[in-house]
Image 1 (cartoon, rainbow, N blue to C red):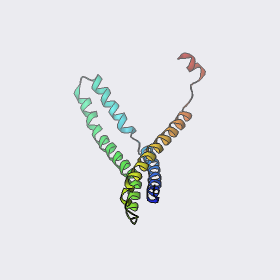
Image 2 (cartoon, rainbow, N blue to C red):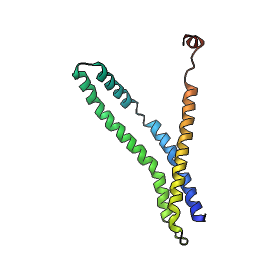
Image 3 (tube, one colour):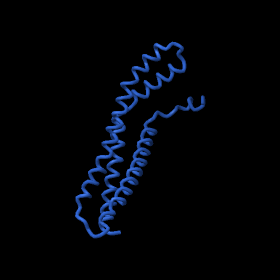
Image 4 (tube, helix red, strand yellow):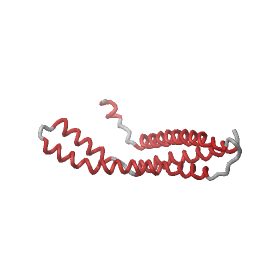
Length: 146
């Protein structure tokens, strides 16, 4: 590997880790609990209610939450793409070094993709462990009952 490929891999790896961290941070801050609660309510009414008025009323209340949900996901996606796009843009300003100078994009994209996936897996697993550790543990009487 030439130095340009090593630099591209390093920058891709770091930008991927930043993207993973941003994804985890923005996803947890922009929670979607309201949308999922309303969707559950609409689903229950769909399965249980013979009357269409209450279902229609809940369904109409779901639309603004759906628009908000989609907008939040778009913001998260654009936020996550930003460090990779900036790093890619910075690397395009690099002067050419020999005949293989055009081939740095593939190592960059592979390193960015792999580090993003790895970072997301580690961060979500760590967050899952923290949530599990903070959950109340069942008492002995609850264990015996189940």
